[in-house]
Length: 263
Image 1 (cartoon, rainbow, N blue to C red):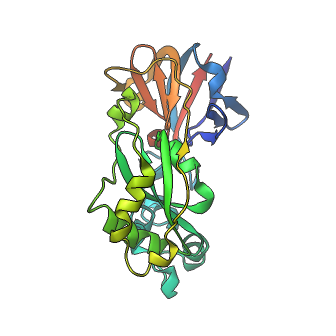
Image 2: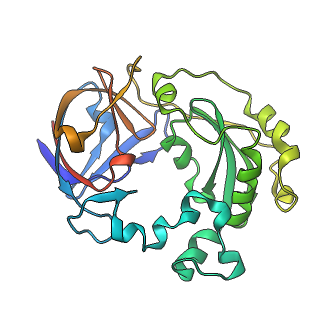
């Protein structure tokens, strides 16, 4: 069987073992069913996730012209502290910015390669943690807009990491941490504006990824350059496919590439 479509991040379901789904336009693949099977990946072309034209992907699945124009790629996406919709100020599209920014946001701690702080919309819990390959996570504050979450993250990342070491995460070179203790330890650094939204009593969420074998020395597949790859899928963690020969392929960072998958 051969499936072809433009890559978008895998959809997930937090079950006893996380379930992964890949939308290939006319087909919907449950990737868990492909674990322990050989699959072949081939690069076909490009398709911008916004304009859907066959244009080389610049960043985040968008062509260069879309990336610098659409609100989905504005700076506040990666740096929530730059959000301005709560001030009624437009960046690229005020209606879109109000829709996304003026809703409940979570500042959280997640442990994927180390304990890190992050921000996500409340409706993206626990999806965001799954995408980062975190095996445990906990909410710290729940605020009414993206700006408050952003300034809280900026303050907390002076005391805790805000990046994931993807190699360490994929090797499963991790230690369990008491995230409740981390939450309580960091409380003193929360900005005054966000302190009323501190979550006093909650427990950490644990996540179980479908991996038969973790790579000791993960090597990243550049399908755009290599064109073709074939290997046995032995696991999925975060947005990475893990193969038996220790090759790993990040679906999220390859959004906008049209590929074929042969089973």
